Image 1 (cartoon, rainbow, N blue to C red):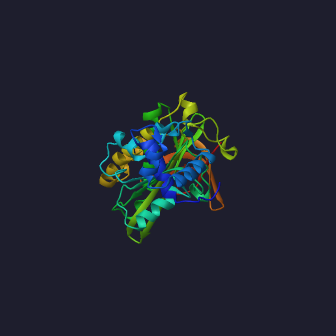
Image 2 (tube, helix red, strand yellow):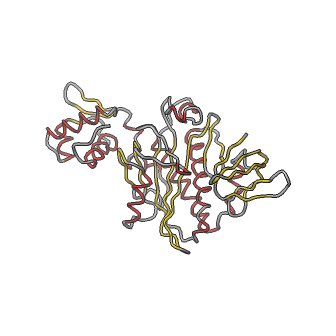
Image 3 (tube, rainbow, N blue to C red):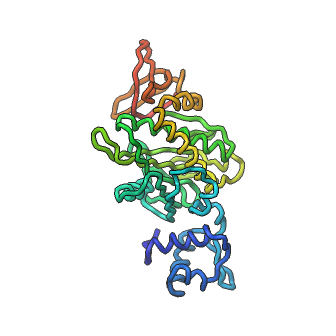
Length: 330
């Protein structure tokens, strides 16, 4: 991955024009004018873009187009499928970022409104739960982070994890038709393994949430995964038997999230718990090992508490409630 000899903004503008415009094929002169760069600068930008493996085509007549442009989740591709009032109405699409959560946090710190979304085609430093790295494939996945500003006590915030996992499960089922399963607290599984993970990060003072960043990563299209996760994760395209449209999936995720979020704000977590448990095969009656901070607990899952904690019944019959941890099923 080479250093950029020009602004990231120019790359984002190039993708916006090639993928988000009704004009599918551009001349070099049209692109240079629209991007406000010289022909020489445009040549450098296109050469870098193509050398990095992005699906750019340059014809012998100097026309330029992007293969699979319709699958790139730029704002103009996503908004026709949105039914939200808040989420996704401020939408930032970028080609490359260290982490969409980091980018969304910076926007939130600068006062970005609730519902602001950051979507990237590639992450160089994606993060997962429990300090893990989130591995993704450029141009294939959904890498989305969202700014929320809920008027809640910080003690209620863990319920957002369950809410987001449920919304992702519903959106994946709606768009791909694939049956999904939820693993506490927020992993979404297909029969082939984990296809979606969630990372929520909160900025708060005692008694007051300033904002929550919700990050969602979904393995959408393609045929292969990084070696480190190939035996544990799944890809929607393989499970669905064909490509899954990323703009439509991003919109469905935001639509489902807003509907559940409004219920959560108005009625609390209670109305969502039964929906979540009905979508999980492992939340009741499944032998598990839960590890957290060097400690482990074995038992059998016994549903969720009113706060969304995982209830584990030990061999002696006592029940523990787990608010955070890594669940291993055996």
